[in-house]
Image (cartoon, rainbow, N blue to C red):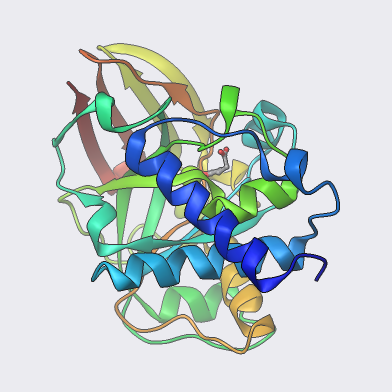
Length: 265
Ligand code: OOG
Ligand code: MG
């Protein structure tokens, strides 16, 4: 690590202030050019500690940059992960106030809800599916705390991988139906105000969304942690993210997992 404890704490506080006031800040590597991935992860941990002080708890995790479309959109070509808190969950169809966000974007994602905990360095796709309670379509609303939604790897990890809000659908699907093969090539569609905005298949997500969960389990293992039972896991957008403005209505459909929507006010 290259930053002092106080510098890491202050970085986390500045990210939280940016989110609280919906005011972007310069990316952290502008202030600390030597900021490495370890520092960034420690800042993300610090951010979680601050949210825990507010009474929030971890509801699950999100993988990000698991598809080419997303990597190309932001110019960072490495999967990453962050945490989701209970306070960031919104109901299917929820109205989201754009004034509380900086420059929100919407992503269609396959979400897994875990029945059993998973741990270890080489969790398989089969183990992921066996430990899954259900699959559900989700919208992730990302909102970089950095100006112009621009960042590098360390800055975006520190910023909890742009996590802001997430919406899961009402339709809970048995993980064994559709079969894992179907889940690996299901169409993903995202509509904005009734017009198709983005389209891909779930194969865009590391070849199969269950691989994204397996990668998360390996990443957590690297930190001496496990994926707990009951956790929600967003596996990463299959398509590029779409900017949202007041008045917009977004709806996603993922194969036969069903639909999920949100509107912005
Ligand atoms: C980083 C988070 C990416 C995804 O689904 O790929 C992400 C960003 O693009 O701001 O959540
Ligand atoms: Mg995402």
